[in-house]
Image (tube, rainbow, N blue to C red; front, side, top):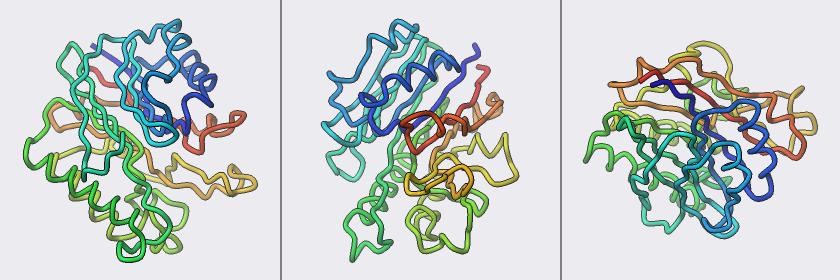
Length: 262
């Protein structure tokens, strides 16, 4: 069984329903994981996606913010959702394919602007969320699983446009990178994107604030595809669809894809 999986922070699935449909038409991934859907589950658009063959869906939603969904051409059953750190946020949902592979879709808190939990509650929530993920993976080591999503951390020096200038900027601070590393280690997750593309600058997010995001190219790799060691070697063909960031009225994130032969 071979399937291609995509992850994309869509920044409102209702506002960008046409962009989701365009991606599904042009790239035709078998599975699309969306974050920051900003919609209650019952109001997530489905007709256009189902018409393109995406008949299966699992989701968690909230009005106006957060929200995660998995759209699939392949039969998919719900495999739970965790409220890590007890934030009451719709930030995780899991689905299981018929071959037994579990797909976890995460939207980790962004963490605000100040990298200090004493001054910024949101930063503390982000660290607590990662710690809760870490503890969950320690408690039940995942197997035959894929983890994707907007993890809101660019861990490597070449995952950001300037390591030196972003060391004190939320998403690349040492404390966040360490927390993400411990979470990854707890589940023995393999970074599939960097397994396939081990060298060089690589980004999946470019700020709306940049007048010309493409020319400035001040990006960060915030969106990730991980897999457990038992299936990591089955993954290949990772890529970031940078051009999608240039579509009309886009999300500030680009889709990240990988193919698995299982």
